[in-house]
Length: 281
Image (tube, rainbow, N blue to C red):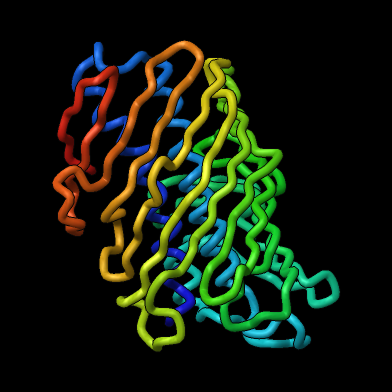
C-alpha cells in the first residue's frame, strides 16, 4: 500500500544517529565521547519517530466513521508492533490506543516495550493520513521511559512535517535523561499521485536541539537536504548533517561522498578538517 511509504522515510532517519556511532567509534581522537553519546541519544528519538509514523497507519480506514475497519490487518499490525500488542479506537475522541500491556512486550525490532502509544487524528484527509498528534502513556522501551509529543502535519502534494516537543528519555538505573525538541519537513519532489511508491522522492530538511544523558547540550542541523528515494528503503542517497555540542567537535555527515547518489551503505564523516569514509550498519 502506498501509505506505507511514510514508514520507510522515517526509518531512514535512523541512519543519522547510527552512522555517527558507527564511524566515531573507529578512532577515539576523531570525536569526543559526548559526540558519540549525543549520536546514540538522537538515534533513539529517530526510532520512536518511525514507530509513531507506523502507529498512525494502524488506525481506522476512516477516523470520521464510527465502526470503520482498521486500515491494516491484524497480521500486519502484529508484524510491526508484536504479538502482545492490542489496539482500540475511540470514535468520539478520534484517538487510537496501541497497548503493549503492563509488562514487557517483545517487539519485532528486538526491543521490549510496555505502556501505551496514543494517536489523536486531527485531519479529515484520509488518503495521506499525515494529520495526527502522537503521545505516550507510561511507555517504556528496554526499561527506559519515553515521553514526547509528535505532531504530524499534512503539507499537501504528499509532503508532511513532524514536530517533536516535550520529549525525553529517562534511562533506567540512574542512567541520565535525554531531553530535546526537533522539527523535520519531508517535501515530496517526485512520484506524488502514482500508484506505486518506488518512484517517490523526498527532500528532508530540519534540525534538533537538546541535552544528552550526560547533561551536555547539542544541536543537529541538516546542512544540505537529505534525499530519500522510494526505491532505496534504508538509506539516504544524498545530503549532509552536522552535529555539535558544547564539549566536543562538530561532525559533518555526508551520505553521498562519491557524488553518484547510489543506494549504498557508504558515507563519510568529517571532524576537525579530517574526512573518513565509513560503512553504514
